[in-house]
Amino acid sequence: MKHLKQLLVMAIFVCLCSSIHAQKIGPGLSYNLDGSLLGLGAQGLFSITETIDIAPAATYYFTESIAGVSSSFILLEADGHYNFNISDKLTLHPIVGVALGIVSASAGGISASSSSFGLNLGGGAILNKDEKLSFFGKLKYTAVGGTGGLALFAGAYFTL
Image 1: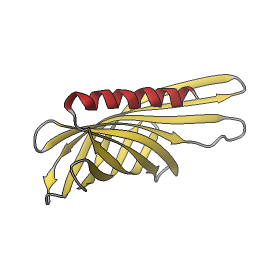
Image 2: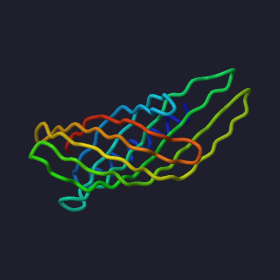
Image 3: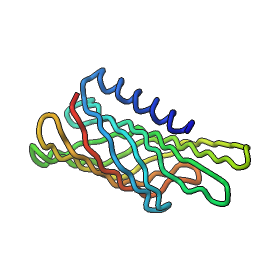
Image 4: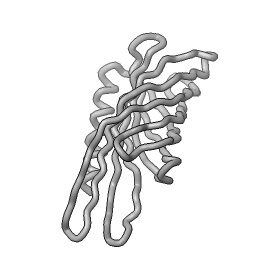
């Protein structure tokens, strides 16, 4: 429950940052292919120039409890995009960014957590439906300590 509160605080932070420049924010689903984990997150999009964007994101991955040990994994990221506008509706971009992975576990009343920094590399696409709604998808590799891996992330952006 503590980590869900942290995720909520991060989502609110992303919303507040997005409103500064009135850019885009939206929910998304992630699937980590290496760990077979499903995640729920939020991502913002800030345009720095016409071709460069910054995309902060927070994702909570749902983990299984095994033999009385419960664990959680939260990934906080800040990615840079270099946009290639294919048409008015479609933009493709490589992804380079940084990540902070937070892993925690508890068993029998004892808790422990660890965090580590890492890098993101990948690519993505944004499909603009209209002025207020866009859809995005990305495939990227995240190297964060002993966790992370190849992940798919898809969602929707809403213009503020």
